[in-house]
Length: 352
View 1 (spheres, rainbow, N blue to C red):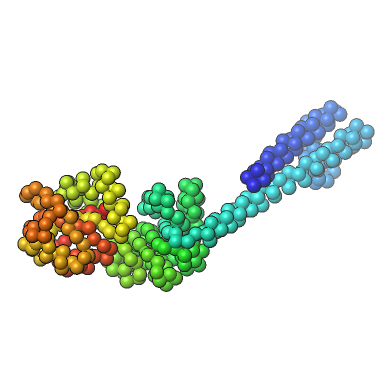
View 2: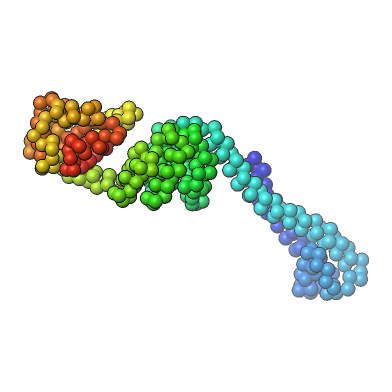
């Protein structure tokens, strides 16, 4: 198929070379018959392009008639071939595009339990690379044709379209997908995509990106299961490095710990550090007391003391103090429970 689609370009190049040779030979022949260069070139062009204007000089000798007849036969044949090559090149390009779209749609139709990534910007590209590394099947949707072409060059299945439109989501196989991640830098678009996706697939896991804090509640109401705030995550990561460097090394520095965090995610769990502010309801309470109140929403793995040694796997009687960093592992959707226990003074600092 690649050879077939590449041949129009070769045909076009061959036709141009052929016509150049015919026109040069015709010009030389007229000059040899005693014509000036300008008259010879003009006669060749009139004959080859079959314009049919009056000859610049009478064709009244057997030699001139022979040259003209040969030029008509060879030149007109070459022009027909060259015109056909140009048309073939245009139609082949369109055919290749249509064939590529059909092949891509066929690949999507064979997917089931896949992931749909809406947006192929900075975050979308990183997400796609991570999914590819994890051997997950996914489809990228983006409204920018150049961006879609880039995704395809990277070897990913990518669709050009607006993910806010339900037909586009349906073409991406949303009814068979297990997860949708909308990571556009536009909060309104992410909310609308979340609404559309939830209406099309009630069991779909939806992870949405949010830029403004006020958008998180809107995305959750629209049907998102999880909301990611990239700006907040970056700020929280910096705060973690400043406040709890030991916890940061525990959560991020070694391949073993990263593998541990990935294993937790496969189990539907997250690991993070929570700062306990002065005045928090959990200050002065024991680890066992807050775990009991959490009712299984999370477990405490360690305490990073502000003014003392870190405590790994604290027992249930260990007291929580203001300024501590509490390393916890918990289930998605635990934010409401954590807000109740830590009140408004808690802030998430790291997520594995």
